[in-house]
Length: 91
Image 1 (tube, one colour):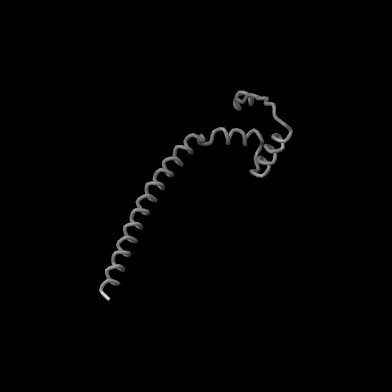
Image 2: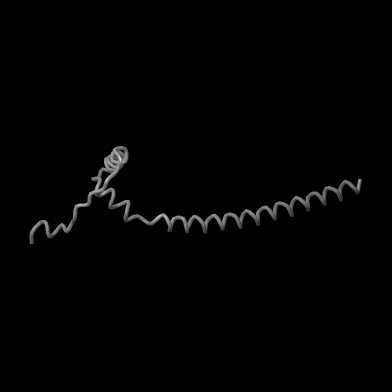
């Protein structure tokens, strides 16, 4: 089997600004990989849409928990205020 057949890769050319090219090169160097490998890894990562869905669900959960906590605090404060008023009235 020829080496070219084993690799089964194709060349892709993209146009970018010099700054973006520098960014890619720095990111790849920091990761210790080639620019090609960096691009492959980043493209194969979980899509940001999935991350956004997870974050949206988490935000909804936090908002609901916050509402419940706020209601509990308000109820506790009302009970404490009533108890203080009752104690002051007994004097």
